[in-house]
Length: 502
Image 1: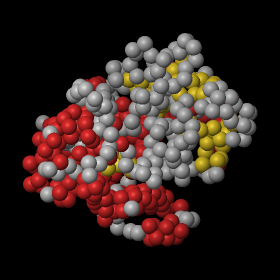
Image 2 (image 1 turned 60 degrees about the vertical axis):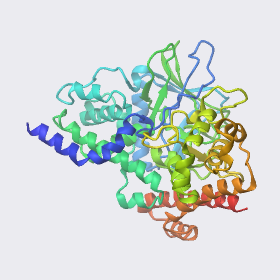
Image 3 (image 1 turned 30 degrees about the vertical axis):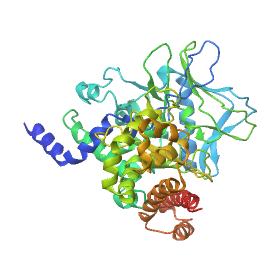
Image 4 (image 1 turned 45 degrees about the vertical axis):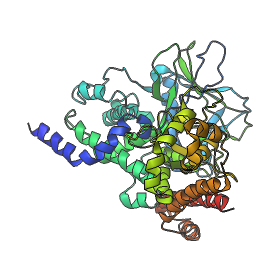
């Protein structure tokens, strides 16, 4: 009865947040690193036709030389006993970070790590509970079958608690003890991001995992502390690969020792795969490397926000950089800019036109917004949130889908008289209907950008000064990450504002 009472109390305390989280439960990518299901890798003959790498690999961990060298030698001994093979590189200091350095010339697709399946920490959706009942009730394991990161976190906690009795002791000893991922930030640290959307996303995750941690008390004699679960989730989120086993077999998520020492580079490619012939995982060089050069792989075509969110670092260059404008922001701005009453009158024709641009098969329609079918609020206002549009830091930041969507929303009553079908045909190539229509469309976008900038408490000059003042401060790493993130965002916002003001 006491457990039931505690559980009810926890549920009541988080009821409001869980209303928001109910949407997140249906979309696991918000609560965990995205699993890149669309990255088809080049495969050797006879291998699975679709090999994938998750957005979950090691990140750049700072080197602490003495403890690192000792731990690395111990891991090497352990890995050899576990029949993990590697060649062509060593793990060493790379400008203050640990990384994989080529010890010989490597050709593209040279295999550099081979790991048997049993030498990885692996979780799959249909796994039976791997723990004894004095650690976890199997019911909880089954209930979280869609959340691989919670399952992997529990595996890490269990093995860490076992100490030297664990098969994974030497591997766990080398895992970082501290992470700079926003999931572990305090409220004051989160505020330094100056990005309400990002902050809200992290806060939802924090509340969800805290809710799950409290719920574990019903299923574990010794549930994890907040710090223990946070550490395990950060390890799982930043060091786990996902491989497609092929032949319709369930996808699994695995922590692969040695392979997870390789850092990210935006110019590289994903390079982790399952070899069904040898029943092992392989990490290969995604491109040729000379001796002494760092070997890097890609964690995916992701922006700085994603890398900070799940790995706790920000690259100084990233060809995939962009920020996001949400449909929620756009629709709210349309009401403010064009008037709520007019928008209500035009909603039906705009909604019908969007359907024609999304999925209705009509002669001469190109369906340029097909990817909005499952996400758009304009199509279904019962959704918790709408589509997210990417905005790159280019001289012309309006990508076709965003431009067409803005143009649709900027249509006035006079222009709407042609009807939904003709309207959709006129808008499908991203063209403006008139100079005044162009002005309204860009005004909506400009106002969205201005609102984003107004939410940021410091100027770019002030941010630059903070970075100078904290350059040598060892205890200011999280602040520096936040400042670098918001400075990059401000630069992109300013670029977009310049575009619409020309």
